[in-house]
Image 1 (cartoon, helix red, strand yellow):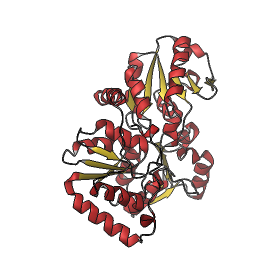
Image 2 (spheres, one colour):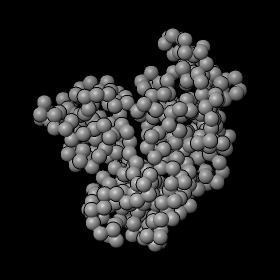
Image 3 (cartoon, helix red, strand yellow):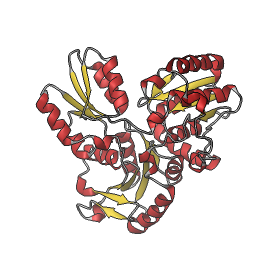
Image 4 (cartoon, one colour):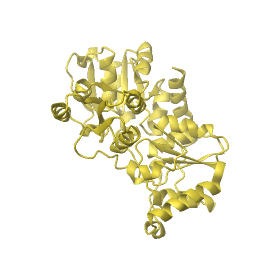
Length: 367
């Protein structure tokens, strides 16, 4: 059963977990981990809250964690502290004997949800009629298994924010045009950095079923950007960069490429989550950074780099609300369910979707 078809009948957290003290939650999670031993691996995405990620055996971005989970061949259970598309990717890559659990089924991703498979199938027909066989589909790994499978079946591949440049180069060697899902900003920022002008990019709106932001001749289009975005990274603005530079001219601004085009252009640097982490860790003591990405990660970077000044670019909190649904009560509930032999919230991708999703992922890894 896919996450898309799961009901939330069993998503209500039992009262016993709601009433536990912080100390009891910590003690019971630690004890459950010890009891399960090598049969268990807990994966924690960078955006997770600190009180959860401290229990992760590994932390990283979504694809890195999915691959790590599959490599833990002794582990029978993978608990993914992230969001649903990440758990789907983990199940796609997992060993046959492994199950993948998402502690709270409500932990979704608004960006991934902006690319619906039925909307994509409709768009593909229209785009093929308009441009002929000149388009290759690419999807950011922050997408559902169904979208990855469509891309794999139609000759395309996936990309991460780290390798998007390389993947786009490969895609342009295959076809004249790219349909890029689901985040228009990563697609636009990457293509522009490669020298493709904005006049050769258009946005496809699946709600109105038409092109938007057409700045040039449609026949010259090279990037067709799906109208999707990350709600967290859209909260960062040019005005915030101006204000922080006025307050402290020594402050360097580094942002994620899911931010808007104007923000990325104005920042001192931009890159994937891993790139942001490594850049700040490698910077000299006393350096100052304003970071445009999820607040849990920024606060962790500040705590782990006390010799530097690391602040959130925005003056307001920018948490990933769905990621924050994964909390200690849900994590303990998931662990207890495994110990009881009745695991909850198991994420299963059907065989055909899994096959074509893996084709898309394997193409990326080959690139």
